[in-house]
Amino acid sequence: MKEIEQLLNKLPLAQLQSNICLDCDGAQLYVDGTNGSLSTVEVRDVDAVIHVSQEHLLAILHGDESAVGLFTSGQITIDGDVSIAFRLKDILG
Image 1 (tube, one colour):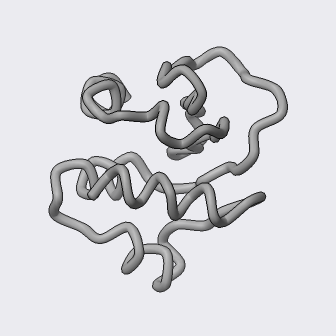
Image 2 (image 1 turned 30 degrees about the horizontal axis):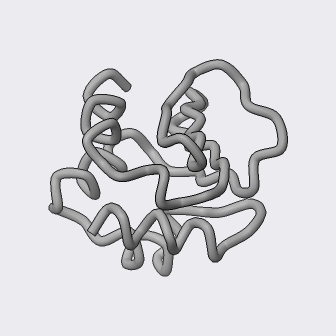
């Protein structure tokens, strides 16, 4: 998760304007999309939970995989507001 956190910290996460939880193989990483910070401490009132393996998330962050492709193939699932997940996809590139 350390590499994932480092890569996510380089992105303009405050553009999300929403809180999300990235659930990667049972480890949660919370994105505060209002101030652009990351935390492993549970954040209440998340707008969406994105379930993705660490391997796939790293591949997305490195540009080797498409978040949309993984979503449509069922490798990424989303609980909550799907539109927020698509905003995250726009930030990831």
